[in-house]
Image (cartoon, rainbow, N blue to C red):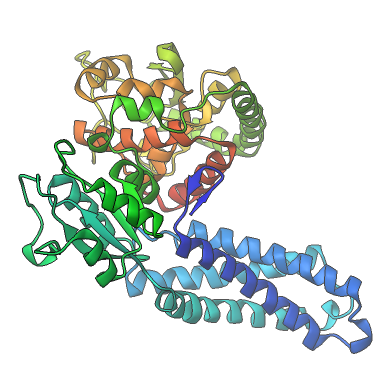
Length: 462
């Protein structure tokens, strides 16, 4: 499902809407039950609806930060229980805060404690029973057929198996495909036409994932007839963009970048993004100043050397600029003069450095670079010129990420762990390309919100 130029899993969207409705209805039901009939005026119900929606929005925010809406990483029973308890506690506090700040006089003074307990308990029970159990089973899965049996088809099939809202029906072999990397039982083309397989399996979508497309490898007329008949036919590049939030390097070409949608850098978008950056960076600096002050003191006391660490990075259109962070490594981290990436358990990181890198506090001084205009709140992470030169030669389309300003956080940072290899950089580039293609104010806000969850859980820190 595409909203504001960004793709969402339709089950997740429905779950969000259901959660919002449940919280709001729970509060409205409580208001009706506990209020006197003469107090239930339209104005009173309107005030209750506003408060219910505020509670619902807060509940969505809490569960999103806790990862309940992230379908990529299912929780174990222990993790689910722990996060549900945290959600219960925070929801109770949220309800109390709303009723304290926005009291409803008709029933607030007598029963607010009862309302908190009833609402928080009802919401979590409904969440666990209806959303976690009944909703995925009640919704029909989208049936997908992969056209191809080679490397690309195998990659699509493995992805489909991890998506709860889809069902992999099988693979249809092209007559010109030279390799078959999928299991024989999954190939459905033995002696049957594509149309027969689609009708037999009730296929909703065909993903064309051929390694070779020339020389009559695709039944174009049959694919067109199926599309006209209501079956969605999707190219592999568009499939990965929609399903994984990536522009896959092995499924794209320069022509696709040039003639496809997206990659817009218009004046209006640039202006709106700049105003958002100035406002956002100013607010974040205001609220984070006490944390930055404590961090500066801790860095100074922990190890000899400066509090801040400045390093030249490559910015928009290849322009160099200095990025500033709180120093998290020893001053002799690169005493041999050879640049190197940080690695897991890096011995160069100081004691305070491990903590501030874990919770991303070392990145806060970059907000000044945002105000200056060298960086944006959201964008591809800036890299050092030494690595950029190497990566541009080794990874196709790496330079495309420099068409926008680098960011304090980015789509790759919330979707992929910290990387210190060419393979990791390639994987992250595919997320960066998605951002460059589809970036919007809405996507920036989604990334900033997900960044909160990443910071709170320490995910991907190095």
